[in-house]
Structure formats: C-alpha cells, structure tokens
Length: 264
Image 1 (cartoon, rainbow, N blue to C red):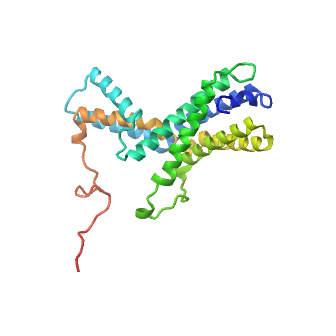
Image 2: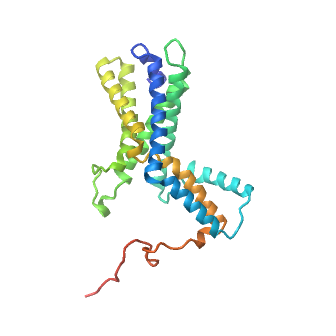
Image 3: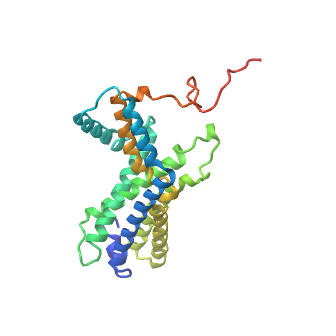
C-alpha cells in the first residue's frame, strides 16, 4: 500500500489531465484567496504602514549583511523550527503538522504531474513519503485538536466546540485522513469504499484550498514576513521606541482594566 502511487492507479477511471487541472485550480484558489484576504483585512497595508512607522523611529542603521543574517535566522528559527512556541508539545505538534503537510503536498504534485499513469513507473520513495507525510500531519493535527487546542479545566471548552477559524485545521485533517483511508481501500481493491473516500478526499481538499478567504490558511504566508520585520525593528532600535496602545494598561498588558483583589 505505502509504496503504490494511488494517483496512477486512479488514471484508469480519471484522465491525468483532469487530476492535473484540479491541482492547478487549487493553486489558483490559494493565490486568489490569499489576495482577497489581504484586501479584505488590509493586512498588507497595515504591514507596510507599520514598516514606515518603524523606519522613522529607528535609531540604528541595519546593513544589507545584517538583513541577510536576520533573514537566515528567521528562516531557521521561526519557519523551520518554530522556536516562537514556548510549549514543547505545541511546537512538536506544529512541526509534525507542517512538515507532514509539505511532504504530502509536494509528493502529490510530483506524482500527479510526473507519474500520472501505471505505464510510468513511480519511484517507491514518492508514495512512501506521501503516506508518511499524511500520517505525520494526522498525528500532529489530532494531537493539537484533542490535547493542545483547548484547556478543558481552565477554559471549559470541549474538543467539539468549532468556530470559523477552525476551518483550516479541520479541513486539513480531513484531507489527509480521507487520503490515507482511500489509499488503503484502493490497495485492498474494495471499489465501493474506495470511491466513497476518494470523493471525501476531494471534497475536503477543495474546502481546504478553496476556503482560504474564510480560514487561517493565509496566515502561513504572513507569519515569516511578520517574524522578519519583528527582528528588524529590534535590530534598528525602533521596537523600543514604539508607543504603547492608548487602550492598553501598561501594568497588565491587556485591553481591560483589572482591580486589586478584595479580601473580606
């Protein structure tokens, strides 16, 4: 099962051009959804406004070499190792999910475009990495959903409490879960279940990539830029000179006022 290209086996029912067109359509959905998200939330405008404000408050000049070094640190720390997470469990869950997603998506694209039929022999490493990536994502994603996302004792939130922001992680988990189940039934030759879970796989992946505007998918594109800018403002001294928000009490760092505890 894990060394069989599930997409080449599918080519006897669905033309490779249809699968390839679907992948291209999903890329267009992600790009279009991200741009619409930026326009709707004005995140790019807000980012560049803060950039200009920080430049005016800068006390040090950051050279090109320093910027390259900062960019390297951003990639190795915030992007590749997610060092911003204080919790070891949350960091491990995030890394499993992130690298599992990358493995799953990259190998999917390679197999669909380079080895779309059974006549083209797929290197066994590709479907192996495809299954490993999906499994890694499921482990990290379900770990996050059931054990990290909510603190039942502190917040009273149950695992089944779902809000719109959860669309990304739920559709992501559904996509990889249904992909693994579909692959299993395909390898077992059970046509009915194979068809059902393939349909669920396509449905959930369409929601994942087509729902960028309503989910947190676009967040992954903003995060590296925000982390890089944060390091730049710290290096040029502008971070220390940024004013406190007017509605944020300094002593508590929150947007609400707190009273001292009363003793009766």
